[in-house]
Amino acid sequence: MSEKNTILKGGAMPRHIGIIMDGNGRWAKKRGLPRVAGHKEGAENFKRIAEHLVDLNIEVSTFYAFSTENWKRPAAEVNNIMSLLVDYLVEWQGMRKDKNMRFRFIGDRSAFSDRIQKLMADVEEKSSVYSNQLNLALNYGARDELARAFNLLYEEHKSPITPDDISRALYTKDQPDVDLIIRTGGEKRLSNFLLFQSAYAELFFTDKYWPDIKNEDIDEAILFFQNKDRRFGGLTQGR
Picture 1 (cartoon, rainbow, N blue to C red):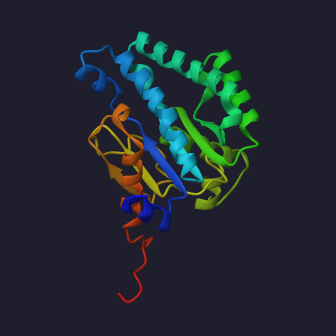
Picture 2: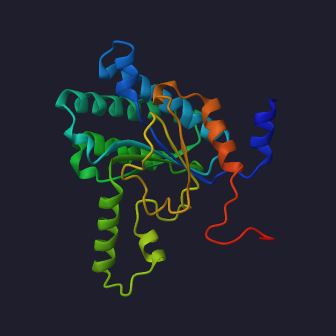
């Protein structure tokens, strides 16, 4: 076992990791390939990294797969992404006995086809017996999520609204807040991802495109997290 892995196993692990999977298109362009090739390789890498997080026993992981703004992309690209999503959901149902992932699809499902919505519901139901929570953010935007939460609370005639009220009205209700956000592809912003849940998250950015991310890169991000002094607005003892 390497020294890095020894540190990972011995230190405090993040309970909830959010991952912004960025750079599929640029990965493909760099290789003279169509963007769809980047999305396909990115989808394959999602499977590998999701399994690695389960192996590390991360309690919750949330992957930003398709935002509310991504519908603005060319129709052919969007259709390809939807096709990859269908393939994955169908594939998962055939291999679920070998995995330990409990799925939750966060975001507005109404924009998806009836078939995709049914597959989402089926996967959630069949995976409910497993323990490691995997959230897949699809047609997701944090501002839309907050508006939805406020409307739910308004319908309950809840006043005044507290942070705990908002938390339980989010897609991630009953889950811990995000401890660590990893963004690939070189950009250094959250891009409308888990804005409420990541109030005290550590932010790890890498220039590597998503398809190039390996298990060791995730371990590096966790090591970065473990070396942080997380005070949550307070002071370290003795200061």
